[in-house]
Length: 224
Ligand SMILES: [Zn+2]
Picture: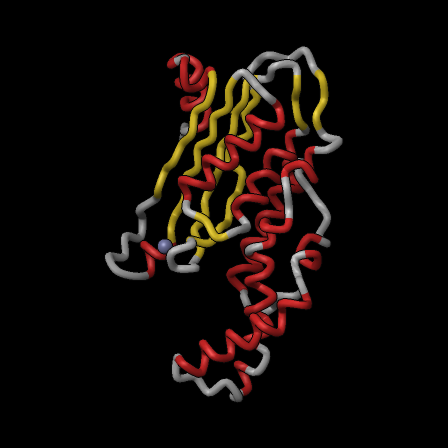
């Protein structure tokens, strides 16, 4: 593994993969290797060395010797979504289908970085769309969440980007995206609102125009 030091991140990634397996959403583990851009790695590593020493750390002590490199790799992994596009993953995954009932994938695990503090926010995304002849492999919806969450983000934009990507790719009658997330910048600093979670939603097409459709989606996804 690339990231032995970041135990909390390993937990997240492992958890995600496990959930993928159970839902049949598995994908290649090579993703984490693809995220590493060796040209930029040494620059980021140097920057982390500067940050550590400016924080008053002794960057030569044993525990920190490889930390700048590990942190640089971790940061590249956590922002690997910049190198991916929805076209790449949807290319051969859209099918013509005479299905016009609501398709819902709920509880998609989501991990992102707040662009204001560079600390994680994470939670769950719920996605629905009303097909208009075109459907997509269900695992691809989770991949779209991944592409946009593995960047520096604000939750509102993340929600919008996921909805727009689905809307553009499938031209459905409607798209709904809800994200529930906990922001570590709220939890760990300042007011320390441990249990506060933030909910954002974007409703397009029928989900926007028709209260009954919207209600059906919300009652199916927001049920605890
Ligand atoms: Zn923040």
